Amino acid sequence: MNSEMIVSIVLGVISTVNGWGWVTNRRKYKQEVKNLEAETRQRYMDLAKMYVDEFTKNIATPLEKRVDELTREVKELKDELENVKKCACYCADCPHRVSVLD
Image (cartoon, rainbow, N blue to C red; front, side, top):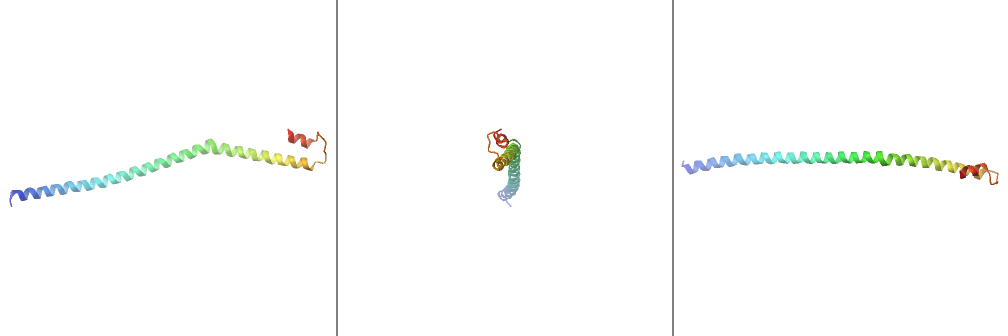
């Protein structure tokens, strides 16, 4: 064997080893990218949950309470108007009419 053949074999082995390192590094980096993407998705989900919680606490819950109050008030007003309709008294100072106007 001549020296050129030995050098070629040694260089071939070195390039194979270096190539294998590149493949393993590539796999490692792909896995790292997947992990970072999963972490980013989780952060987005956490932010979305936080925004929904803040919306519920600051807007939806007070709005729901106000809607309930208005529903009660409308029901009371309907009841009072029914009492006015049923009232046989047509005078200006009818207690049912006065209660509706108050």
